[in-house]
Amino acid sequence: MGVLAVLGIILMFLHISGSAVSSVFILSILGLFYFIFSFALFNGIRLRDAFKSESYQDTNLLKIIGAILLGISISLVIFGIQFKLLFWQGANEQLLIGLLPIGLILIVAAIFYFRDKTEFYSRIFKRITIYGGLGLLLYLTPTSTLVDIYYRDNPDFAELFNKVLEDPENEELRKQLNQMREEISKKNENNH
Image 1 (cartoon, rainbow, N blue to C red):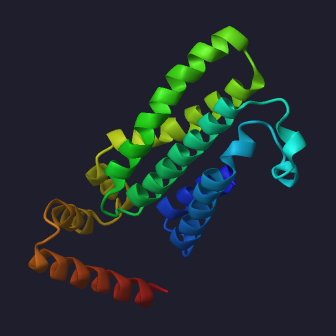
Image 2: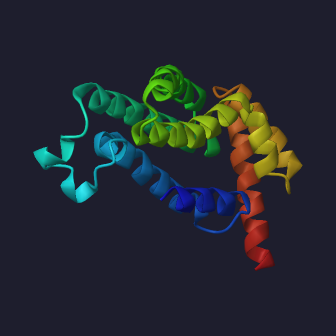
């Protein structure tokens, strides 16, 4: 699922039709998956065995709680990534709310890993590296930079879009942006 999410994001930045919608769909499913099934995923329990009590004989309550907290945090980061890539408001706040507990879990997991070196902590490190790393990268990347990259073929639109992001309450700028968007859309239709 993560590979599909990355592919969707790449296609979105290549302006492939329908890629933004598919990226939203895939990232939403991925975020919900971590939110719901993290207790089983990080404890190495197959989904079909997730609701069988005997599946939890090799784990303990603290690992289950830690897995749930990490799953919720990763889910928040995934939704924050989605918000950031679609230029929705609240992306950085959502990323930060997910990244802070991920950082704390990373510290705790590192301490226990060097003591036990179990597969449980390896699973945690892999997911934190992937989602925490991408989330941190996007958190540190200004939205204006992403806008400039996404609209690299239309710098005038990118500039106006960045002005709207800086002043979201400015109705005149929003009207200008919508007008420019319509002009670009008509131009693209005429070219096809």
